View 1: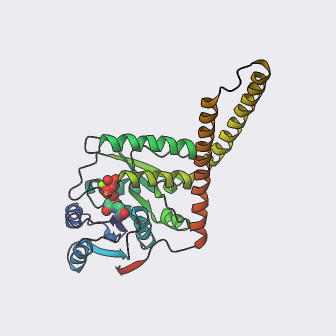
View 2: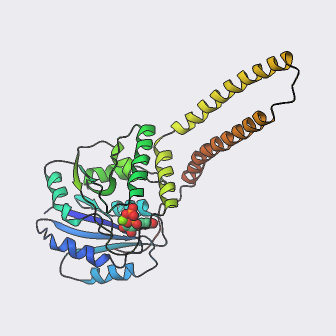
View 3: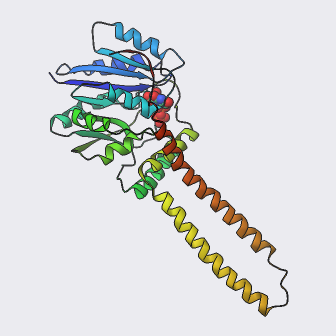
Length: 308
Ligand code: UDP
Ligand code: MG
């Protein structure tokens, strides 16, 4: 019998743990050895308690868990789930039921037909906020342009990965994980399934605007060094214009009597160049920071409890 693990990163999701379990149970996937692997990402509510309650249950689907010592983030929780699975396939999905479990049979079907990665594409509806839809598609446009990847706009971490793919992913030792990008970049036979997202059953979204921005920045700087090239181009273009401006200034100096003017232009150019320099330093800093974090070689996550 083939085994399938369902990995569910959960951060303060106490009200969703049982609902998700029930919905998966209803699917009646008797043909497979199924296991729910909840990754408690340092929740501060009763998430772990709810998971433990399920794991004690001898009947129904087997429930395992990993509990982090603190909050490490969604992507890291996902990685931990993949690291701790020996199943023939892993399905990853959110705990809040925005990813409908009813799609699982379709994912498995494609896998049985030979796909090694079955990813899902979110068909946006009013269950996803206008803001999220638009910022997400803007982000993927920029990321795809910069990295040469082709991540679809409705990409989410709702997918099935074959064992082979999980072994491949384990070879990547990156500290700043952007699994969506990695999965797109590693090849393998891919198939997709569309789904309509549901409303979060309980609780609130953990992705604030700030976190979304950081996530986007992480994605871009993990997959592309083009921003560094931009810095160089900007520098070159600016030096060219300042050269032209210098020539212009010299010409004016010799050909005109009223030389004192020019406050505004000096000030704007100084501010502009100052701003550009800061941005460029920031870009370099982003990469240097990544290098620094990577070079320390710290573990991605720390586990305080587990039951596998
Ligand atoms: N999540 C997590 N750690 C975090 C933030 C989120 O494990 O630091 C989980 C969360 O519990 C959920 C999934 O990641 O299962 C997606 O998060 P959320 O639903 O808040 O994001 P949204 O759907 O609003 O993008
Ligand atoms: Mg959600």
